[in-house]
Image 1 (tube, rainbow, N blue to C red):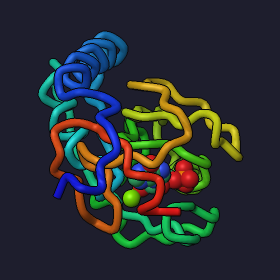
Image 2: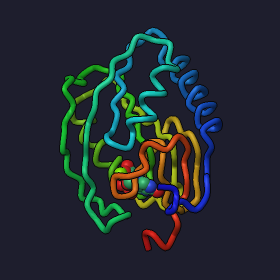
Image 3: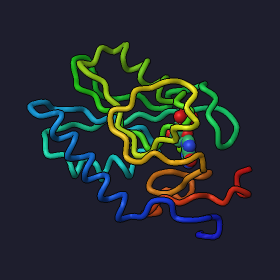
Length: 178
Ligand code: IMP
Ligand code: MG
């Protein structure tokens, strides 16, 4: 299973410390409110599960699944909702929980779509930010780690649906996906 891994980029300990810190910030920023955390499946699954346990507030969770089309490891900006939210977000304080922002196309589509449903507030929390690859500008409210332009796997992130269960974030060997 480890043969396609080049190197560990972020260790389990570093991830856990960062998630705890982000949870504290969210707890502080949403005092007196009941945020609705929207997990973008499937990549956001592990991050969401850990993050909510570091938020000391009443909160709700919901899930959304999208597909972005393009070549294997690139997103084109064509996004389709595979599974929509269950909850009506009108008037809610919505916090989107994402694994990684790359070109930004997927998140731009999601935020534009959710905004039309009139939430009270809409913020973004992403574990990873591949900032150098951004093609559309998106204000990010909570960012775990800014990472270089490498393809990463683990802690929810996949390569062809595998490796989501790694407890750390690793770089895929470049020859695997180029
Ligand atoms: P964007 O639309 O280009 O921002 O792409 C966002 C989506 O592409 C993420 O939600 C991931 O599913 C996927 N993605 C982008 N970079 C990586 C990576 O390095 N590893 C795994 N998935 C990635
Ligand atoms: Mg993915």
